[in-house]
Structures are given as structure tokens and as C-alpha cells.
Length: 132
Image (cartoon, rainbow, N blue to C red; front, side, top):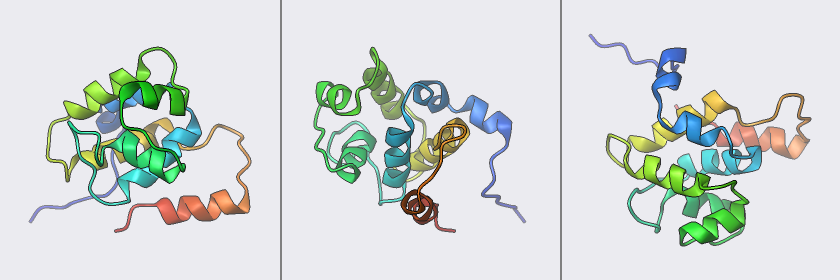
């Protein structure tokens, strides 16, 4: 019988190609992307339903192209393009890839060290957690 664990080990996070790309993203974008992974199926190779599109909607914005993502999320350099290339090239199904994104976001961290969470953020982070 196969044992399936929801916990990922450090090696899995280190092998996730999204981890280095996400390290330069601010925590607000990271939390929006995390919420997007829990909002239903994310799609790759299209703007309609992609991770940036959904994260922007969660933040009350609209993003439909790379320049829009760079402006909306104030991404440094070519990080928007790096993310999209990595996201679109992930191995696996559109159903499985949000798990890779969620794992990478958790490995990078959703809050800055020492960041004080408001009651609203604390309740939001618990509501953003993946459902078992």
C-alpha cells in the first residue's frame, strides 16, 4: 500500500524550479499566488486562469499580459517573464502544477521574518491553507 504525505521534505522544495524565481517576489504577491492555488484550477500557457491572472484578481487588479504583471506586481527586472516561463514549462497536469506552486511558496515563506500579522491576516492565512 502506498503512503501519501502532505508534508514535503527539504529536497523536494530545493528541486522545485519555482523556488528560485519566487524568492524575489514580495510577500503580498506570494500570499495572493498562494490564495490563487486554492481558488480552483490554475491553467498554464494562457492568461485566462493563470497564476498571475488569478493572483491579480484576488488583489483587486486585472492582469492579462507580462507588462501588466510587471506593473501591477512591481516585479524587479525580468522576474515576471522568468515566472511565466517556469510556470508554463512545469511538468505535470494543470491539476498538479498548483501543488508545485504552493510548495514553492511555502518553501520561500508567505510572511517576512518578524512581520506582525494583523488579525485579518492571521484569519486570512488560515483560510488560505490547503484543504485536506
